[in-house]
Image (cartoon, rainbow, N blue to C red; front, side):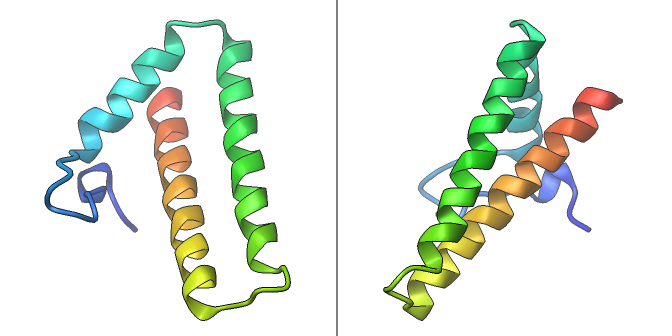
Length: 88
């Protein structure tokens, strides 16, 4: 299982530290009404569903499916961490 510290950037030119990123997004979401947080996660869910649906269309290339799968995994991982940080 990955931890917050293992959330790293894919390119070295894009500096990203996982723990401050999660803490910052949770802090930002807590500044607004809970309906906005629910809407944010609903939109992320819609984006994930669209990525999954796009890989099952007419064009089924391995690279497109792999890229979409990695994005889905990354988004779900970030959402899982945000929920864990929010609950604790």
